[in-house]
Length: 446
Ligand code: SF4
Image 1 (tube, protein in one colour):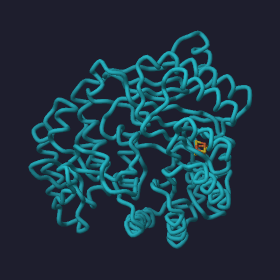
Image 2 (spheres, helix red, strand yellow):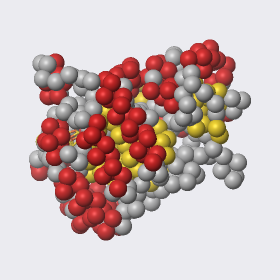
Image 3 (cartoon, rainbow, N blue to C red):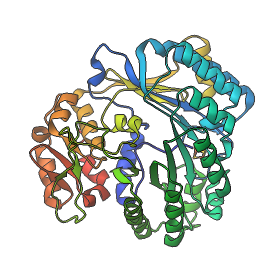
Image 4 (cartoon, protein in one colour):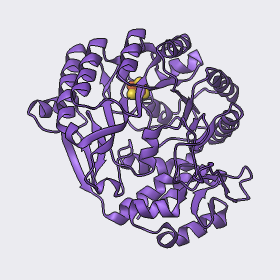
């Protein structure tokens, strides 16, 4: 199960950022200069483009699985890993899709053996996305034995009728069974993906799902509002008037999410992402905690004993790298990457992808070098998705631009609206501002 890194969240007002996000072919493929140095890239995304069945709402590149194509894909991926390995020293790895867990044990062994041979094991954080219907104890143990230490489980709902409505192949019972299997295999960092504002979902059902999900005891929670992507069955049903989109209900669900996640001990660190753990991960962000009173945009810095600002320890490092403008290689069909100022995107066609790799070359469909100011603007916009916002000095170090000078007017505008908070060290969105994050972020694009 794959969900966009740049999330979907509580209100239709976020639609502009959604479009912006899609334009960037997210999984956020950009960088702002840090990778210009000579060192190898430290972040790797691998797209596995197979699913058992296409979900009603899904616009990600994936296709129904077939054994022969999957074997060919695995061979091509190994070839692509070989081509990229000299420029990789992964600290974070993320296998997304599609449904990575749909690959067989034998196919996983092939990929992992290649990564071992190429010196690509040992990442600090290595995530594999799983569908609860395709997790097995054998696969979980194999992954763990090779250093995979984080699982992202596409739960989406714990209501059987809504799972059916979404076209998911798993049942609620499978969620609990898979979660136990992952724990038994030694995974102590698990994310649960949920969706809200699903047609037919009431506030009561959402509350019940949230309560059951947090009771699982996962370390991380990602919650996304359903979006209606063109060319999906759900979009067609909406256009045909089969259901109404209730924006007020979606907003109420988002508020419920924030309250219940906080009540369960999760710290929100991005619009759609919540994690447990004392803050130690990020040592250079502004550390802004949004005021609970959205009309009082004061900054409350969260400073660790070392004097640094922080976000939760179980925050997804791989995604934080995207939001902070880090570089990464993207492998697999439709995968985007950004390395040393160049954004790339692989062909969204598995057969074509395989053909290119079989000829010994990368399957890159497009390459684009972004002008520095445009990159900096995108970096600013994405960073504002995080509760910590941007600290001025790290932003300058990353982009070469002064946030407080280049975007002075925009920041003043947002503070005046009550959407932004600013002090001598940095700038971030208030809780109210996060609800309008797309509009706010667009101001920073150049
Ligand atoms: S599991 Fe469903 S939502 Fe996830 S990539 Fe496959 S079809 Fe799309």
